[in-house]
Structure formats: structure tokens, C-alpha cells
Image 1 (cartoon, rainbow, N blue to C red):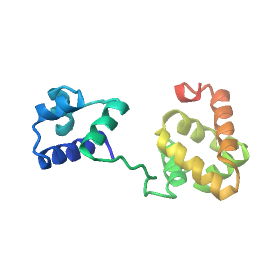
Image 2 (cartoon, one colour):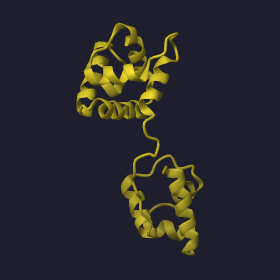
Image 3 (tube, one colour):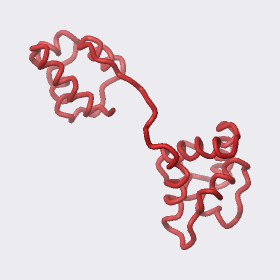
Length: 160
């Protein structure tokens, strides 16, 4: 659930309770403008403490759960890493390399592209899947990724 979706729930709950934006703002210590932008989906950020206090006041909970899309990380990572190359990085090759830490020359550029450009959510999902497939701890795979990023001089701050 993102902030926009939360804002829609807040607006619905507020109207169900017969509260104006102004009254709700006063009750939770926020500005009316903040409530307005939250409900309209135009609020860029609201600190966790403020958001949780607002939700608690309205009797709403935040429930965390894993995304339902499973077993797509390695495939997505392979496709992302292959966009600029003639040859496609096979998800099985990526999985094996992530787990064992060996990086064959043939897939080196693909992995460099992956580490520099792929969304971190895809990399995280690929790590999780490779760990399960190869029966290794994710921590070992992260060590391999950090080592490769250092060797490749990746400019991405996530690997610093």
C-alpha cells in the first residue's frame, strides 16, 4: 500500500466518522493542508510517526506483507541485465553465479549493468530466489554482490 492508497482510506474513514478535514487536522496535530494533500494523493511524504498516529486515531491499521509476485526476481534481473546486449543472460546462470560468487567473463557485462542500473527491488528479489534455489544464505550472495560492485567500480551508492 502506498501513501496515495492510504490517503484514500483516510478520506473515506474521515467522512464515515463525520469529520471535516479541518477537525481531523486539529485532532491529530497536522495542518488541514496536509490532510487535504494526503487524501488527494498529492502528498509527497508524511513521517512514519505522524502517519501511524493519524491512522491510530481513525482506527486504521497498517498491515505489512510480502508482495504476492514470487519467483520473478531472477527472470526480471536477467531481462534487465540483457537489454543492451546481443546475448541474453540466463536466469539459471545468474542464480548460480550469485550463489557461488564466480563471475564468468561472458556474463560480466550483464552483471555490471544489473548492479548499476536495475531497480534494487529486482536485485533483492533475485538474491532471495537464488538463495532458495541454491540452498545458500542470502548473506553469502550479498557478499558476492558487494565484492563484484567494488571490483567493477560501480557508481551506485547502494554498493558503497
